[in-house]
Image 1: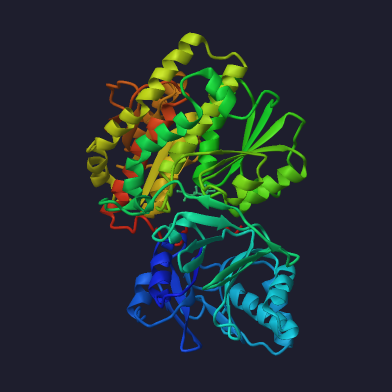
Image 2: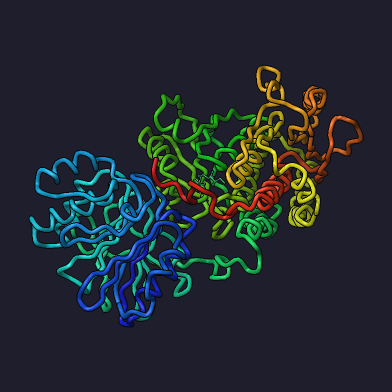
Length: 601
Ligand code: M6R
């Protein structure tokens, strides 16, 4: 949700450095881009609608500059055009912004009354004018920033320049991600780690309300009280290769191909094959008799899968809720409730707000997060990291699978606590877990997805069907396809079809059905027969050997323990979506209107 970058150094290559870093953040938003750099004691601003590529065409990368800020935008206030693109300048202040200023409307009125005029529709220009207004009042940038943080409501990370201090880069963070990095003679601010990986893998994380002042020879952190503070540094475990396509046509395909490794890394981090390792590495869950799983999008879908696993195998009730609903609704807790927040980025605004709500109510929280040191990871009472590494494609694949893997381990631990798994079953499961990476590799190799995609990619509507856990898998398959191919597709609980939706089935309407739950299989098959009788083209993904006449295509997947079955079931769903979007010529890694990390509500 917007990427910001700032750089100050002893060398004169700030423009190239900022553009290079910005390109690594383009997954965060890509409807316009801009840069402000200092040259000849003057702030120059260049911004363009569209991708960073457009900006580069009109930018002389060789101009000498040792300080600047850059932005890649995902529009929130105002259409994606050049005027609304960042950076914005008001008076002596120039800023780039990631996040949202909730009270921008009141502030705008106050600022207009004080003689300010606005050219864009953005909340960012209002934030910029607010800082300028306060700078005029206090004649001191630190004081102006401290006061701004008190006045500006919402979530924001800002990179800031001031006409009076052209050797200084300022930054503030309030509920929006921002890191700081130092490499030799250069100092960076950025929304996320990929921006700095060409230069260093060491970075500092800021707390809410922190202000940073960077010059080519110094870096100073301040808290809300303007006291000088220190911040811990972190080392990013991956490397630059992780954020490169590595010969793959798309990041999404690369990331699906990383699933075998990611699953292995995630599972082996917590589970060495012994029950003792699960007891030690996953927090004590003994006291919880009621679980809420709260998340958004694909992460929410992993919660739906986990609900079935935990309820059916561990025998503990689970409520799964979309975070944007949970944060505002009346929630019933008891003293044995655990709230689990699932988030790849760890910065999703609604999931973070739900975490804070649970904490305010005194309820224990557990984060399942990918991004190390992110807000959810830091604020939850306990955090378990998935080991997915950087995920660049907007459509999540490997992080979704790693979330599934970790939630399966959690369900396993709960099942063991409640004596729901015999030694024999445990040993069998352990053997299958070891084989998961190979199973996934085999599935990825199949040519079938492309062949099936070829037959259906021109369709305008596609339906996904399943029951129980297979319905949860269908929901993720459907989200993946609509997100990257723009085909209108919806997942239905198979039994619900005849209550309305079946009227949409026409000759050759594609239905992608998932059947892995043996207990309910016969019921789903009946529903599929009903659709076939109305002309549907049924594509079946199943772990059973099927020879019958109720489907047109079949994708066979391994039949394994229900706790880990979803980790293989998802592979064909992801690859079908990928192949369809590719045939349609869509921009797979950067689907229209989307951004990777949703830091606004
Ligand atoms: O970073 P998070 O896991 O909290 O993100 C949640 C959703 O925004 C995310 O899963 C989204 O639905 C994916 N882009 C779907 O592929």
